[in-house]
Length: 484
Ligand SMILES: NC(=O)NCCC[C@H](N)C(=O)O
Image (tube, rainbow, N blue to C red; front, side, top):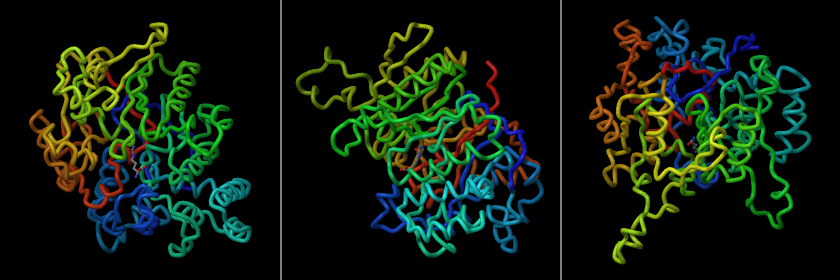
């Protein structure tokens, strides 16, 4: 077993508290099997070069996370682990030289750990084979495969890294979407898209069976489908309860944001709110309904928090609310109407669940900054592409708004979003390439823990083709509490 012990601490109460522990998954060989004819079904718009995405992009993410979250494993080793002789062993979950961090936790190792138990291995293999329509003899072969290899197969869909036996799950790198920590609870997703169904199945087994999560077994939340869905005629998806982690943000101590989107249904949002209120996990839930469009699959593709009073967001969705009073015949039909933009409704236990509406995203986010984070400075909005068409839309498409906060004010994003990076600089942030930052940290010139107001730029030529950024590529399990 790679990861043991019961010292895992799950506690997420904000999007910006210093990150202490998260789940990730490094690009596996399944990504190298995506073909153009299946790319859209598998939710990729393009073909990714596996070797480049690993060596030139994702490995840098792992190194950076390690310096911030688990420095003892990397300090003084930057040259060694980056050298050709090392053959990337630090980054390979099936290798003896793997980092095996208990702070930057690789989901593949958790999976291979639980597969050591015969009973779990048989049950999980049978479930995957039922889902993927495998033959009985293949099921038997898989049950008799050793755990490290089997974990690779269940994720990549390939035997011996080569023969496909079922589809890969290339979106497993977007660990945010399989579940989300809400305080000391774990909410497991119900993906809307079939291409993401196996991810949740694998992680459900991990959360319920891995010793690391033992203390939290009674804190796992699963949302069932409603009888209305089963009783509806036809094969349609109406009334289905779906939810994906990218639509849920544990934004402050008592407040959760829930997107209703291409991926999270109204039934899904209702079920989460009811469950969280019943469990007294939060007092306030805000539903943010966004257009059902591929560009905005989850709310974290249109905004993320940077600091208590700073947010990055897509401007074109936060137009002033349509005002029929001032509309003229000429501009009536061309004005943005609320249904084409964002609708925001908040429910608050302390206010008798009376729904409260916000006219736009800025109004909601400003309310959170001032009233929940007690920010005394003006709330600042940094817009994708500096709110200039067509850069706003181009850069949102490549995840300019999907940033991961390592600590308050220190966020990571793609280097290709130039105009957004310039907007950060205009707002007093420093921008630095990850390669430069890693060197500075390794040489003792920069202490990650004391960094402030910085956008760290990550190489992104390949990763951005998978249609998600670093917010999506992280499932935080523990963040420090924010002082107010
Ligand atoms: N939270 C996120 O926005 N995740 C990005 C998921 C991208 C993936 N290709 C998908 O379409 O599901």
